Amino acid sequence: MLTLMPKSMTLGSKLEVNNRKQILVECPICTLVLTVQNYGGQTVDVCAACRGLWCDAGELSAVVNALISEKKVPDADSSFLAAARQHEDPDPQAKPCPRCRETTESFNFAYDSNIFLNRCGTCDGVWLDGGEIRSVAQFIKKMSQI
Ligand SMILES: [Zn+2]
Ligand SMILES: [Zn+2]
Image (cartoon, rainbow, N blue to C red; front, side):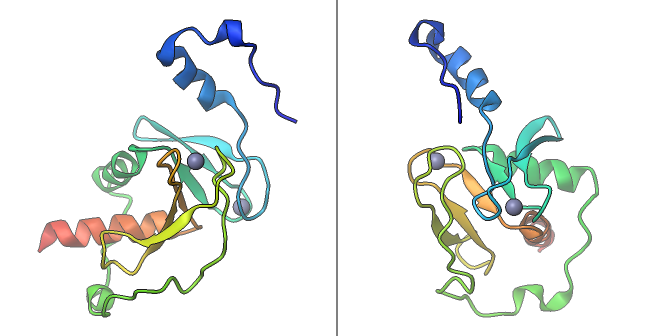
């Protein structure tokens, strides 16, 4: 079980943010404890089993930009943007937020990418299934080339 910090140790919001990073979070799919990885200065939580990835609020775009600037993103093929926008998540699995345990909501990234990510309405973090970070990065890269 998680050990919560005593109230006396939460001194100011900055410290709370740092402490938050040290709380172990579990993969919403495998319930495996996520491991912290560094992408371009951003620390994200990654599942070693399914390669799913958790980004806290605001981290996703920084992680994607880091991947693109490090040239780790292959070009998307030309059919990538041809598909019509889907309104339904093809994988509507309920995934709890690793931080707050609230049920996350799936959404179509950038409205019409057809990459369905899960966002927590409480902490605004985003869950990406294994490989979705690459799809998002390819999508952003493609959009920036048009
Ligand atoms: Zn997992
Ligand atoms: Zn949350």
